[in-house]
Amino acid sequence: MEEINYINKKNYILYIILITAIFLIVPHIIRYVNYGELILPGDKSYYHLSISEQLLNKELSVNEFFPHTDLSQVNSNDKLIIPFRPLIITPYHLIIAAFGRYVPYISLTWAMLGLLIMFGLGSVFLFDRILERFKVSYLQRFIILLLLVLSPLFLQTFLIPDQIYFIIFLQLAGFYLYTSKTTCLRYLPVKYL
Image 1 (cartoon, one colour):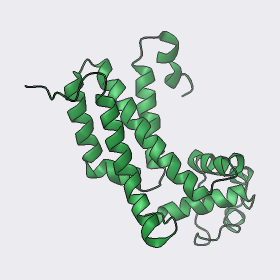
Image 2: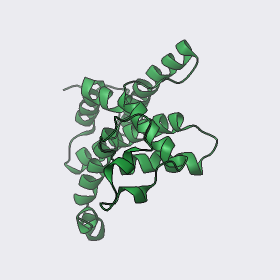
Image 3: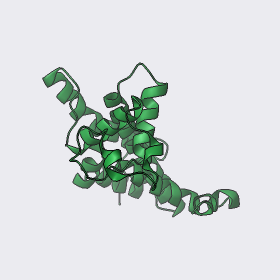
Image 4: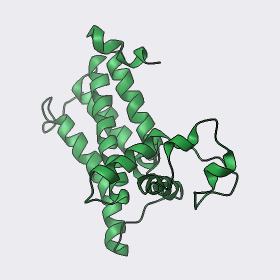
């Protein structure tokens, strides 16, 4: 297999990160330019945004979700959920609400998209490091990562703000730590199970 001259061992990851960033950022920029405001794709993204805003505005409290509370009392504060349907707060909602609280100059919508792009780029980088640990050559890694970034499943996962991208990033980070040669890092993901 003849190697491509402009892709070498030092800069292939730069090309992959650049291609990934273009594919993750351009659809949101086009939507922003066309409509003049940031519009989130999908209906679940607005559901997660609503829960995060309610946590930020203290309309919902994490303490309400312990088992001793009444279900109807939990749903009484939510504006988007059908009454008596259980509301589930995940760490994803807490992270978005924390961004809204501690970074006051950006909206929660921008925080969701920033996390989406950051975790997408981080997932590609972690997948590259995992492939490197299995001694895959850099040209094969480049082709594998390019196919990953261009796959519709990757684009759907990292273009629609949902908690799935957060879970995928955490799984890749856990597998990366588990395959590390350092003993203290190897058992870090398993230690707290």
